[in-house]
Amino acid sequence: MYIFFITNLIIGCFLAINRSKIIKNILLGIFILVNALFTLYSIKNIGLKGTFFNSDPLSVIFTTILFIISTISIFHSYPYLKWQQKKEREHNFYFAAMVILVTALNAAYSANHIAITWVFVEITTISASFLIYYRRTELTLEATWKYIFVCSISVTFIFIGILFLSISMKNSAVSEMTYDILMEKAQTFDPFWLKMAFIFIFTGFTAKAGLFPMYTAGIDAKDKAPSPAGAIFASGVMNVGLCGIIRTYAIIHRTEILSWSKTVLTISALISIFIASVYIMKVLNFKRMLAYSSVEHMGIITLGLAMGGPGIFAALFHSINHSLIKPALFYQSGIFYRVFGSKFINETGGFIKYSISGSLVLLFGYLLVIAVPPSGLFISEFIIFKEMFIQGKFLLMAAVMILITVIIWALGRNILKATFVPISGDDRSLEKPSFIESFPQLCLILCVALMGTYPPQSILKLLEEVVSMVIG
Image (cartoon, rainbow, N blue to C red; front, side, top):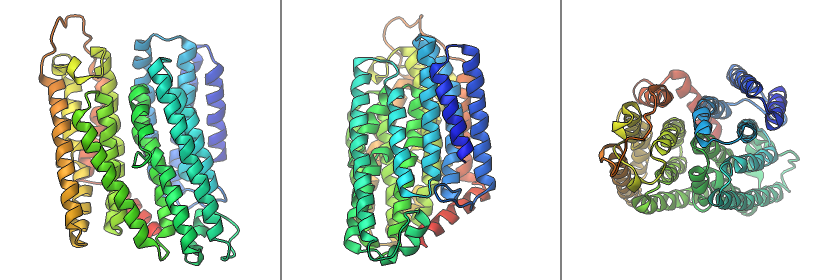
């Protein structure tokens, strides 16, 4: 694993100082190859333990998703950057930041020590900020500083939480803070300080996960960053926050404060879904609409974690499907933006006239993201609602259903308008994108549909192993 991280760091540094297109392409090809080898190595060596890094089912799931999305993001970056007409130096710096971001995300997924997770989460903030500021406008500068500010507060919260966690360990004769040892000795930790630790660590990770209370940073980041980078934010970056929450929750799951922690998760999830429903009704910016949809889905995932047992399985299954379908919509939003020169629904329309394949991505993507069968999201949401019903949480279930219904209506209204309602004025100069640009998105849509009909047994087995790891 160290070889992978060092190799990618070298590639990122060379990309940052490179001026040649040919060398850039070679370096990106090497990066994709190294990323593929790392993913295969992680899959083949599940159960490999180290002091600082390991390969467990949770990290394998997230690294595999990240490999798929990062590779497609590199593919989509070429036409996007060509359209932006920036200097080659700025293109290289963009790719360097993307390489460092992907490397830091993989390291955070694979970290076996809570302090190592904290370090690499901070590195994702720095590298992501360069991607957000790529267009170098006043608005991207504002979004970048907002992202850095909120995420810096979040990592401070995580650090304080780690300090509280170490205080809770004072009488347990534990000297290391690897996740394995923390889960093994969790029952001996002081409950009061463990509560304090969970509150701060969870709050810190919500900035990356896109949950209440620190979800705001991710909204502007996904909107202002180039769409290929926004796709990574909507999958890889949100998953690193979720990964941190799951690993912390696995520690809490072995203690007497489990019921209390479930209440914390439920409150955050419900408020997140409520916020998404309120803003998504009035937002006209296509990418911000997708960003608020991500807040909703992370709320649903967190609800699944709070339900426990089958709910945890459903939450993980939901995260996989969301990490595939939402990037597809972000990629298409970049093409949409390029065609109309605007991200605002009221300034666009009739997309089907310019790209039938792209319109299919929007329509099928919408149906799958709202969990219409055969979407894999339908299975996970069904299980989560079933668990709420079994546990007698009828008011919670009703509230979530009402909020999701509002979101479904708002998303459908905007996507149908953008796809079918003709744009006003002369449209003869508008570009007609090629089918190949929408092909990766259609593949991701097919994957989500297959996950809802014939989910691979290997993936289901991995999810069951993660559930076993969490509940102990």
